[in-house]
Image (cartoon, rainbow, N blue to C red; front, top):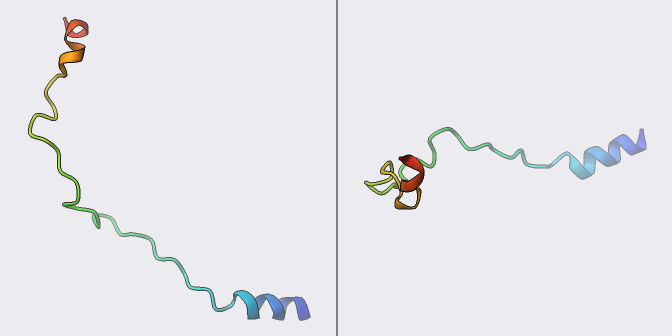
Length: 47
């Protein structure tokens, strides 16, 4: 019983970590307008 009380005393006041919500990073990253264009390095493979 002493061990259980020790654990509760030591870890009982821990904060619960909050998980990020979906969409919280919206607008943080941007893609260049030519993102979907084929790369010149792969032109010989795309023939």
